[in-house]
Length: 129
Image (cartoon, rainbow, N blue to C red):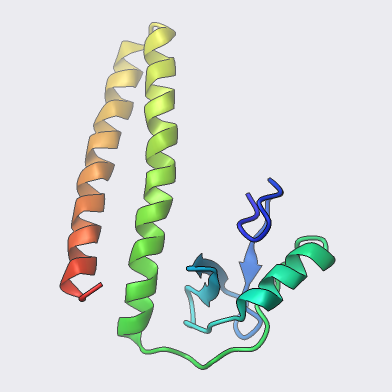
């Protein structure tokens, strides 16, 4: 879903500096590859006026790796939570379809992903959130 306007369109923010994938952190586009930061109003403008080809606009400079890690960890946690919701739903569907072994394996994957998220959250805490 387009996180700029909530329109439901598949959309992605692309870094104008390196072409990397950008994520929104508190409404600010940040490149996961080079750490460049975009302006939120420019990303929103691109979303509404350029067919959802979101551009990131001007950048405030490249943050250091520690800053980038502090940006990436919350993104990974949020992204994993989205996958967890889907995996739980599909595990239930598999069980309802009489596919107990597949359901068991999906539920085990959920447990492992939850454990991974606990480790990611601990890493973020260790960085001083």
